Image (cartoon, rainbow, N blue to C red; front, side, top):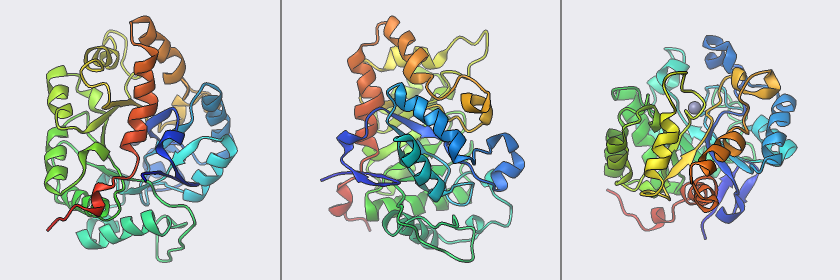
Length: 324
Ligand SMILES: [Zn+2]
């Protein structure tokens, strides 16, 4: 029986509800917020106001995307989930090198060492100290997704992290969420994960709408992987809305592989911090626009509910997949 592993426990996939596939609801004091102060999302009480509004607008779940030692705080995620009634999935994994100090352990640890850290987050509980070291204190809150990232080319560090993520996936069935830089390297990420024995139905590539080329997207989606678009509110005046256009073009062809998110890592995007458009944007204004353009309510149900449930449930293939 498959399940989604939320920060407050495992739930049946059909209990997940309307889900944003790539969010940042807690970013604690870290090297990340040192280099980008606008990324600081550390106050549970403030975040809960925004997430309660999201819940009031029909939202039920979010996949958080801040992995190990980049500002993740599993205890705050758990508190925020309790305070808002929104299911939150806590990630393990590692982000781009730029979110860490140059001497960070992610540059040095071997593939096996990284995989062991990821697996422990998934099976034993996420470290309350976020692998900031030297002490590790496992909490009762387990990770439910492995976040990995690549720049425009694969560096040795990223290849090692992808390999470790794939190993953790094979051992646990935990889904994988990737960052693509402006949509680049999607096909290379897919090829690498496939070669590493990953069940592509449980892989979501993020930000691919930054490269709004329908032909490219067809090639990506033909692999069976899922994608997440989060630029619906980011395009500037004069650019149109390529995210909107991609959805109209591709949803009829790939109705079970496309999800949406805000990737609202900056305070400036949150209403509770005085920003815009606020986290409810996709459920309210953007969904209304899609409906007006002919996207059915049933199709939106797939985008927000059934595709996230299928993607972020644990793969059962890991139990029978033998990998050298
Ligand atoms: Zn993100």
